[in-house]
Image (cartoon, rainbow, N blue to C red; front, side, top):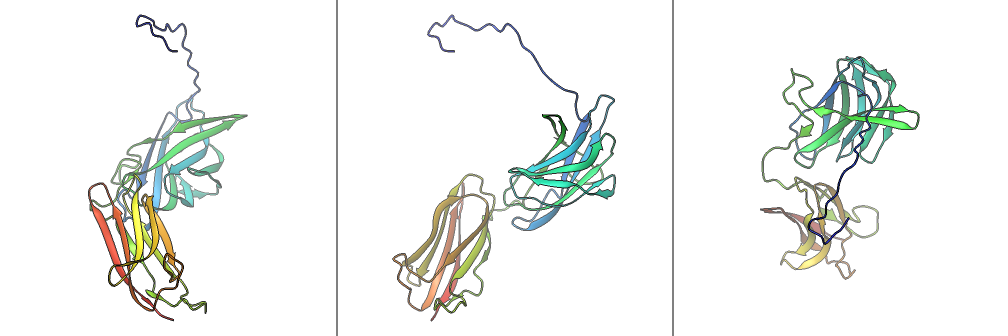
Length: 267
């Protein structure tokens, strides 16, 4: 509502709140380990500690969400593994339990994930379906398991200034002669801790520093990247046999990191 009258105002006549009984009286969640090596697949456990009251509805589904892909391993209820139905979602996984949970001391969700960004969060939600309605309750981060160090759902990376890691150029030899062996150079690398998109420049140069081929010059964030060079210039012509340099560079918020590797090309 817009008005040019500075004295105009809005009066609220009525406010209605619609709510349902909680699925659990309280629910605390904690992920372990809380400090991981960046870019390496890690085995995680999400500990879920619910408490129920007489008016708790219970839950039959657990949604686990994160900004990185999740690979489910198993779920245990009070130390006993159970079979669940898994539904992938855009945000993670939904675990459909064989029966509604109304009494449990601890649930353990075991999964694997690769973390590239600092402060990556793994969130869990309790869900219960009733007819066409789905009731959803967020699990609060906290000290779900006192005997394990940590108290939350956030995973951290070591404190350093590493932005590029795991640069792999294979054997570093390219022979584009259409024999099916080393016809293209496969390159992969990890970008770490970059939340806002930053320019990632990947290029092939000769030993005099002259540009031969631009493989990537687009902004990117933390994650795993794969590139390929077919031995050709930007013009499409085949490069001459010899040694070349692969330059990889990313500019962070306060620092710029560059990696250089040599590449051999022969026919």
